[in-house]
Length: 367
Image (cartoon, rainbow, N blue to C red):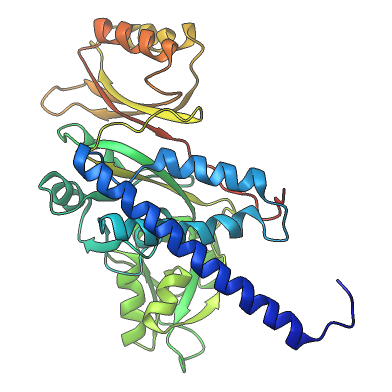
């Protein structure tokens, strides 16, 4: 572009592009409304994470920069969310109060066009969706530092809900205090998992300060906003919501601190995308080699296991339910054969769903 072009000329070009974008976005919204009307007639759900994944893949393939794929996906997440809200406003419940990482995960997946409704427990998330008071629920299932969220796995056993999508959220903890605070807090509050994820940093930085567990990071931020001598460990979203100052950033002990969330719903499984996961619950007889005989079924079909966890089977002493994450979709021939064979060897089998695998766009990935 010639260097002599003035800022005013460049801005006028931007204004013209903005008008074109507005027109095109409204055309897209109109098509989304038409699709929603057709879906309503056939009973199909408006939320389709498999379709969204393919949209993001196509955008990345076509992207020539200078916007990174990460920025492009963030923009189109809001475009898709706004269009979905025109088809049918989605009510999504999450583990509250507002300002938690669960809210952030729900926003990442559904955008600001969704109606996000906080509840007080994981059980309440399942109940809201089971009773039809919410379309979808977002539940934490595991953290890369602290392991699985046992309450979520246990709740899947009796629930009719299945997994529609997964969300991986990088968790960067901050130390937050009210503005005009004293130089050092008298106590530091946070959720138990967050305190555990920052244990070494707290020992080094505040060895003599009282540490207190509270129900959530958002509750910790609320307390810090009310008490000048209290600091909270929470995220940037909580700092913004409660008007707190960030005293220290990225204080988690391990840099790659990731929490995995699942979207639960009564919907039918997502169609196959070619990059999917399948989650399964099963129980086997309390016999030597029983678990090995089950796992070899997947090895025989060359199916990779990305997660295996066990939970006690209630009412059956020393017997366990196993939770598996498998790479692939139930529509794949190998997965179909392996699950059919599992039905014959297990005490019970419950397929929790097949859904698109989560992948982050790399910040510098420009195509």
